[in-house]
Length: 230
Image (cartoon, rainbow, N blue to C red; front, side, top):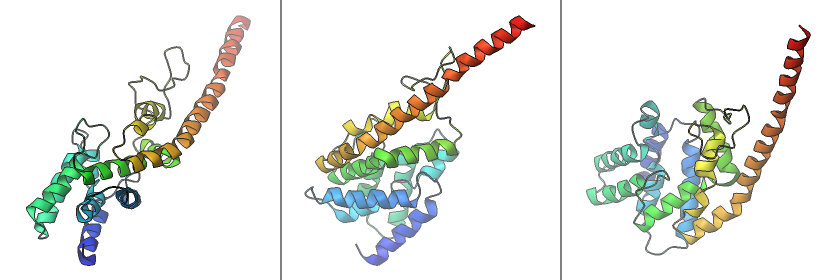
């Protein structure tokens, strides 16, 4: 890929990225991780891979504005239109689009090409370990989701099986499960090294939260006593 082509694609990406949890630095981390993984794979088309990494989240703005939209599908269409409009072949643009469309963890549309599998794994690596926790907290704060929810008896839910969105719910739905879904050995290897940091953070936060809510029982006893006195 020519430097001028890279710069044009990079500039378009930067214009599209406005989400603090999915910003341009996330894109660069995904790109650099993808290049690391690609060294251990064969038959990689680096032009397709680099382009797909740069453009994989350009549909985030549309999804944020309309939750019914899928940023992967929107991003794939935007990437195709941008690339063909810049003179790239339809075949090349279609390969990039295919990578972008299949990069989501929440979709039952697995990646097929080696480039798509590398992008999927590189993107998921940014949800693992301490970085994954930090990004999730930033994102949840941005949409005003709480850290946790309470059960009907007033105790803290650990998030497992919750319908209400929270950091604890997201940990059980995605953060603790992402480690079993990698398509490359290198991606899986990196993820396993990071897992303990995320688990330790969640377990510590849950323990501290439940400990703090022990005070609720003390409050109930004090209020009951106050009613008896009056």
